Image (cartoon, rainbow, N blue to C red; front, side, top):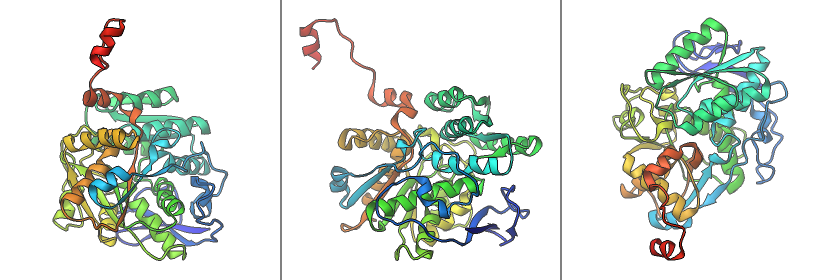
Length: 394
């Protein structure tokens, strides 16, 4: 495979691979010049590296068997909103989130570039995934996160897998600015989604959706935080079409929480860039980001696909989280449930057709944020160890 890094703003092409953004300040993306397709979209052997001919690495990948996540048809929710609904449950990845798809590529690229340490800012899932893959690769891992603002399940993962975790008295956007500066000073390989190689792994969600469904859905709905995933998935669909593997493209729908909604606001006003939300707040900690670094890529994905963005309240997110678990048996963290809340908002707004097929991407497992579960559902009932006491509460 031949590829290069290209600025989405000025079009400059970079031959070197150890850069994250263009000198003009624009975001970079990997442009595949040519590739020999060696896989079939046959629903078999699903995993990230099935599609290795379209992934920009030249060495043996660092892998924990990521990808191959289940695609569930949700008949009860589908009946409610009036279309066929599928959930692509990324919480079934090794670390419990979609970030593993990016980290298998990103950490492999770090080794290819002969780096001995990786770093990231995180709202939780990025740090957990990076720590796991760094451990597998034998690299040092450094994490900056907003102190007291990250679900403990995710912090525990990063710590257990050996990362050095530093909490700052600030928000995610501040942590990202700091870690980028530190990476430049110390030579650490940055693995936030500003890294174009990390996003290459995440585009395989698109590949798998088509591989599992056997066709292209009408819409793909997913939560938007730092905005890398929606742009990566859109890139994946475009590449499938470019190489003649599909004929149609879906509409991309980004879902944001009301308290962290710069992409939604920009789409509503048809702007090409965002106005940052300086103090983002939502129970969905994974998307509590007010200045998404990939905003321009995300907006391009939405506009090019003729998609849209919606915002949902914390109450709507919590209801969607509980309903997805109790109606379909799928347990996800709050940010993941934003996709279901967003689907309901589309239906409420009359933006769903009865014959449509919609795939909602749920990005992280329920146990990523157990505190949110207890807040939503309450604690277990306690009684004396007697049959009659138990029957009273039953």
